[in-house]
Length: 249
Image: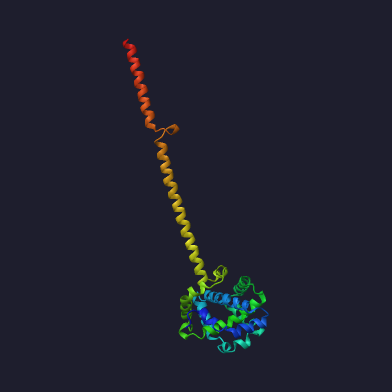
């Protein structure tokens, strides 16, 4: 097995394939490569979202098992076929949802600067090619729903690390890898908010206690209350002394 599922799929998009794509779509070779580099992890993340449920994982396993393995050997000669791209998009739409496929193509086009139509065609080619590549793995990695779920769980770090900026948010609704990342961020945010709130409450409590103590131990003008008590005693004593002295006189 390749080091990552991304490497596994990328290996089939060699210079012959990318050159043919660039020529047939009328875009630069650099743009084609940029779209491929962004769309492969995005496609795999969307598939992982489907595989995050038991029924979805079995759906992915069935799709891999039914994929046309022979197409990979002839990829360079078929990528210019518009029917292939159109069929690939329909395949992805039925598997992960047309809204997600549309979101992926739009985000990848914006991130790479490639024309939307060209990006859509490349994603259409990537769909069946991805499942054909996954079928090259040992059957123990995809022949059942449980196997598919484990395969994507083992690869989640590699896929998430190479998602284009913004794609994680778009794919969060699919659950799976992107959804887990969003959930972790949400939990981290909640924990941070709770900690901040607790710290603020504690700070307010301490400040309030200190202020109350200080105010309780001071009279007006900030003079400690015991000073005023002492002065009162002195005044009373002085008045009493003067009163009794005058009576004695």
